[in-house]
Amino acid sequence: MNIAKADPNECDIAKLLAGHLDEAENQDCSHAFGIKRLSQDDIHFFAARDETHALMGVAALKALGSDHGEIKSVRTHDDFLRRGVSRALMAKITIAAKELGMNRLSLETHSTLAYAAARALYEKLDYNYCDAFGDYGDDPLSVYMTKRI
Image (cartoon, rainbow, N blue to C red; front, side):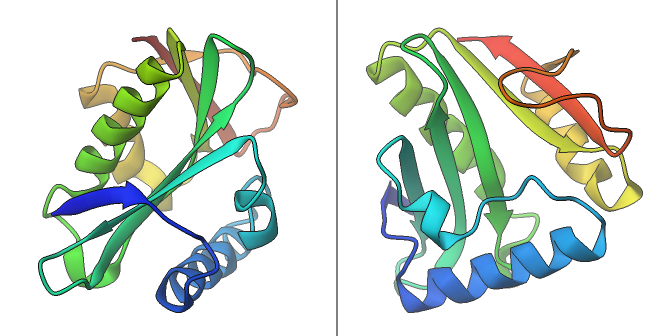
């Protein structure tokens, strides 16, 4: 698996992100970023690809300040589920955040059953539940997690 900075406008990435947004909307989750937002300067966007260059997954890091980052849009392609793609993307984001001088990462995910596996992964990676951060407010469909890096 190779994980590198990528352009969210690439055709296969755009298709994966469109599905991600559709699923979020169907789950009444409104905090997922679209391609335009993921292309802005405060976002570091990564794609995981296999040896044939097939897209395995994507993730993004949003700078919230000089020492705090937010993990956005972690998504594994359906063809690569349960192969450690999201875990590898989270590790890459942690490395990138440290290189940028960040010492804390936070994320927003959902309290619904559809996101139980994501929450379990974040718990295994030592993220702790916390109050809303940044521009987030109280939302019964959202949970917030953070960790020092």
